[in-house]
Length: 344
Figure 1 (cartoon, rainbow, N blue to C red):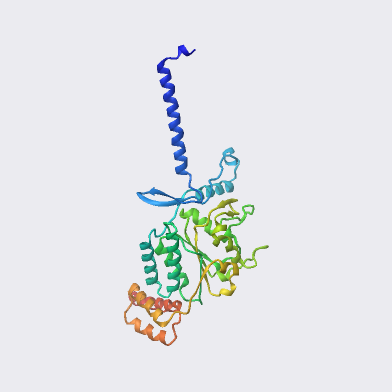
Figure 2: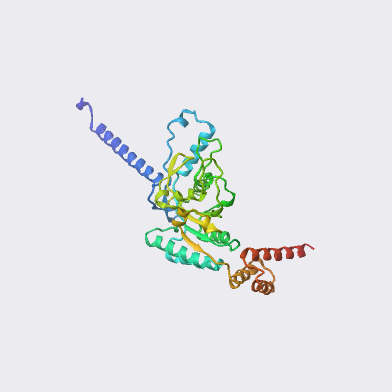
């Protein structure tokens, strides 16, 4: 039989084996490139820019019910959501100490009453950069102050300046833990948490999650948390969050890169284990000087009459404007009256 095989046939067989080997290598490289690295970020070139990426969730197995055509519409939607979440995600934010310092300077310039918060963020994010992270990462932080100090505005400004997607959750409007930790898929009204949904939508693994009025969280669901803020423990503790089991997907998700900023009016109403896992910034009522600093910038931004500043200064020193909320109401009224004059 060997005598019937010519040299040309042997060369052809070798070529085929070489082609098959190169094809396997290409498939392995493609699989490694497309499959997001779970747990540990790696640097890739995206749009000519070196960008850290990672996967937060393993890809689902589509080899069973969906392939047989037996999945109902809800199951297919769940599978699609799971697939979107398993795509590789980027890690965003300042990638150097210079960029971080610029962020903090701009943040403090925009929110002069939040010096302690700015310094806490700088210290935490700088430590992460020193440890090797080339993205924004901050320790879970709890800001406590009386209403009207501008906490929500500062949180939104931080997201804007850092370039991170903002996932905002209003704690006063929640009545169950579903928006924080998802609801079980067995229920007809099941839904993913706002955090997991935000990850899938933005494809960024380190968004800024702001939970406003965390001291007003309440759980009205049967068998729910006595103090809903306790549901946060498994999210803000990064060791636990790395292996977060999502009830909606019935899958493990890495939430350890998510940045949490919690806002509260009353520290005593926040669960103690949550407080212990956060850096707590307790703010005082803004001084008249701080109120006027914000007023000056807002008058220029809104293009209001400069003389308005002297009126606001008198009101601030008399104690008629004690919070940034009242200041903005006064500025809104001034803007409204100017608009009405233009209409006439």
